[in-house]
Image 1 (tube, rainbow, N blue to C red):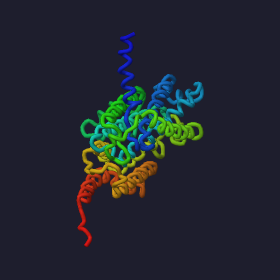
Image 2 (cartoon, rainbow, N blue to C red):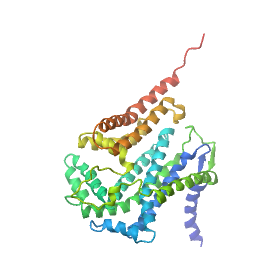
Image 3 (cartoon, rainbow, N blue to C red):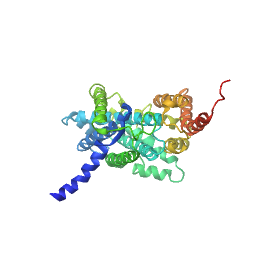
Image 4 (tube, one colour):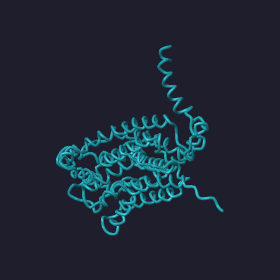
Length: 388
C-alpha cells in the first residue's frame, strides 16, 4: 500500500502543478483558451480515428467502399466519419486562431522562444497528418491531390526522384502509397500528442504571456477553478459551432469530387486541397518554377521558426504598437486572401494577386517585423524638445 501511494503521488503532483494550481496571469482573456481547445480537438481526432481504423481497409480496391461501409452499415459510423473529417477542420481553425493570438500579443518573444518553435513544429506535423489522412478515402480529389503534392518532391536536386519513388512505394500513387499513408496517419497523432506535452512543459517553465505583455509574476491566480470555468464557457461555444457543421453541414468543408472513386485515367478539372491548406497552396502556385515553389513553402516555415530570433521589438503586445497592429491585420487579411486565391483556377488575375499576397506574407515576417522593432526603439528613446 505504501509503495502504491509512492507511485501515485508523483503523478498526482504533476497533474496538480500543471492543471490545478498552475499560476496564470489574472488578466488573460478568452483567446488564451484556444490552447486547451486544441488539446480537446486532438483527443477527438485520436478517439474517432481509432474507431474508424477498425472498419477501414487500406487497399486501392476496397478503401473507397470501406468508407461507404462505415457511413452506411456501421452503427454510428456516419457520426464517427463526419466528426473525424470536420474535426480536422475544427482543429485547424482553433490552432490558426491560437497562433494568430500569439503573433498579436508577442507570445514568441523571449523567454518563450521554445514554446513558439514547438508550436510551429506541431503545425507542420498537423499539415502532414491531415494531408496523408485526406488521401485515405481514395476519392478523385484524394488520389490526384496525393499525385500532385508528392510529385513536388521531384524538384529537389539530385535525390528528388528517389524521394518521390520512396513516398509512392513504387512508380505511381498506388496500393503501397495508400498502405504507408494509412500507417503514418495512425502514428502521427500520437507524435503530435507527445510534441504537445513538450509544448505545454516549455510554456509552464516561464508561464503564460498576457494581453499587456508585461511581467505578471505578482498577479496570478490558480488555473482551477477561475480559468477552468472561463475556458468551459469557450468549450461549450466551440461544441455548439462544431455541432452545427456536424449535424447540418457535414460536407460543406469537404470537396464533392471525393465522393467519386479514384480514377487514374480521369483528371479533375481543378485540383484543390482541403481549405486549411489553401493559403500554403496559393504561395506554392505563385512561383512558376516547381523548385522555387517548394523553396517558398520551406521559407514559410523557416520564417515562422526564426521569428523569435529576428524580432527586435522591446514591446510584446500589439495594443501598444499602433503601426504593427495595422501590419498585423493586413497579414490576417493577406492570409484570408491567399486562402481564396488557392481555390481559384491558375489564370490571370488570380496569379498576379497570389504573387502580391505571397510577397506581403514574406515581407511581414522577414522585413517589417525586424525593422519595426528598431524603428520603435528609436521612437521610444526620442525625446522631443520642451515647448517654449
